[in-house]
Image 1 (cartoon, one colour):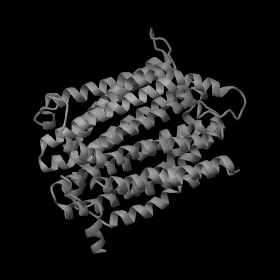
Image 2 (image 1 turned 60 degrees about the vertical axis):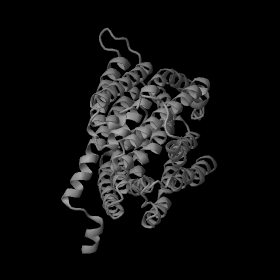
Image 3 (image 1 turned 90 degrees about the horizontal axis):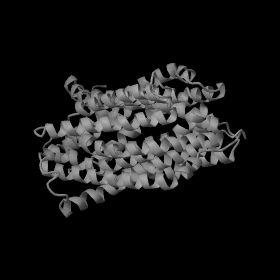
Image 4 (image 1 turned 45 degrees about the horizontal axis):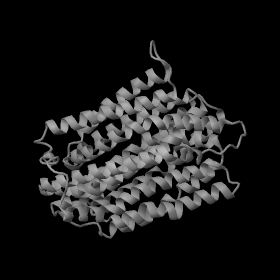
Length: 461
């Protein structure tokens, strides 16, 4: 028992450092997801077709968001280690790489949405009821996409800055910027969706306008603070004096980062493909999944952000060459993440059924959403472990391994299971959802052996 405590349970100082880093990130994402939840409820009050059209577009935006996250994460592996080593010029080059990569991804995404937005939305619409509801949902989806695209550019810029700021251990400012953004989003949603006083009722278009405006508010706060506090953000020294970076630096980040960029893109595309597989069972399934996913995301933030903290803490230890400290911290953080998420899963099981009742939709959709939430709660502790394993491997630059572990697994195992079960069996959609989610148990086994092997204990800079 003593050995177990020594290996997997930290002292007060350890948890204080970990939580000081994690809590602002958790709060930031909690507020963001809470506003997404409120946004979802407000759109949901307009009707099932409006809610479904917006939900489908948000699936497409999700792929874009993850592609940007992948683009900046490639350089973040090096950024955390550069900062840990005190190499501010290297940190500056990693920032440049992020900015260029995020803007390139944004340009590609906007081109695809402009040229083929209708086709993408239509992939998720299967008219099983024959009442024309899918055509209405498509019209609302197109309206929402045309406006919300304008917010992609500030999102890309924010990610480049905010990730570099977090690598220096300053998670408070991105949190404050998110507070301002989501607060304004919530107020603008209410005003523009329903129309208050002299403001006209804009419905779905109002939700899109509110989202775009909040993106710009967040970007302005983050960028202005970073440039006004150069002493805390030394990577900005010379960041805009010139546009290039040494070929050696670029090549190293690109080669290490390409699997990570592809991984995030392919994983997100895989998840939306799984949703598309479920959509063959009808619009009610998409509506139920939208409600369940919005609520599940509120609870998932704990393991997502605790995992992100692993990459920062372990990355700094690896950059400083303290490999044993990196290993020790990693063991304790993984156990803490799984413990926290087991508690969150229990809470989610107890209260999850209340959320779908808030929506203005049918009893069938509410029942489906409640069942999907219960399944997600059962699987959550396993997701916490695999997420922690993923960030552990990533912190040591094992990006090819994480590529196999994450996106290749999704496309080789998860997508085929969802496709076959949803399309070619008579199994109920809740049972299909459970079996697809249960594939996470295979990743738990793989992740355990990969982390235990210590292949990730590498100083790269």
